[in-house]
Image: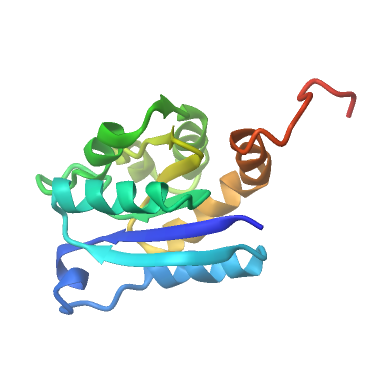
Length: 163
């Protein structure tokens, strides 16, 4: 079973000034896939807070860490920088596909600075901050996630088999 960590990055939600709707959208998606949500955090748009949450989740052995929020152009949007600071390997395909497919929905997709990568045996993917965009983007990448996790767990002997 794939374990999931959800990190919502939002100043207002972390202070209780706004209800987090994107984190619950991720939870609903994960549970619908039969995944086990192991950790849910809401942190402010602060580099060190985001970095610590990512480190804690990956150190706990969570397979899939999904962030929501903080990927745009606003001065306090630092989720990609915090993610880049913790990943050991880049996995750009997830963010590339999300931007490409999202651009068919909205021109604002090109404003996403989301990144994706690997730390230890955890796959970390930055998602947008809106529940609608979270659902859309997870739909674009969900088919590749189980295989990616199997690879990280060294459970795949041969990726080049005949389909």
